[in-house]
Image (cartoon, rainbow, N blue to C red):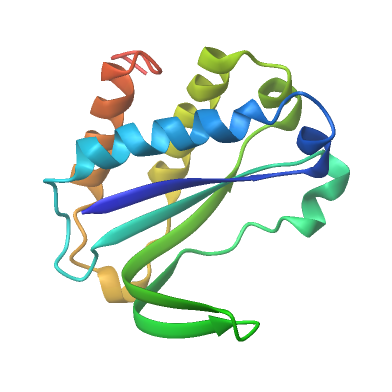
Length: 156
């Protein structure tokens, strides 16, 4: 299975020297994808996409938290230029606290992301079509990865 973490950051990150947060998220995403390569939680899911939102509280309305979405297969063309093929993908997003993430260093920022992902997975309402999805196995593997990376404690 493949997994990707996508950073959706507010304009303030782009106007400052905090753009490295995107590369930090991308680096973590690549490590997580490598860790998850041999794992499978449901035959219906080949990819999981997690959007990590971080914006000032007054900008929250521009970055809504949506319910998780599953797409079995879909072709989409954007502006007659970009063709996208979505296949067996589970997508969800989550929000991290702006103040703590914006002012954090790399390690603390990754720790904030790891904790937010695990907290989100604890209460995530999976789409009905994925009733056989191994939620506990997925959560435990994510937690194991974050423990191995030193981003969460074993007892948390």
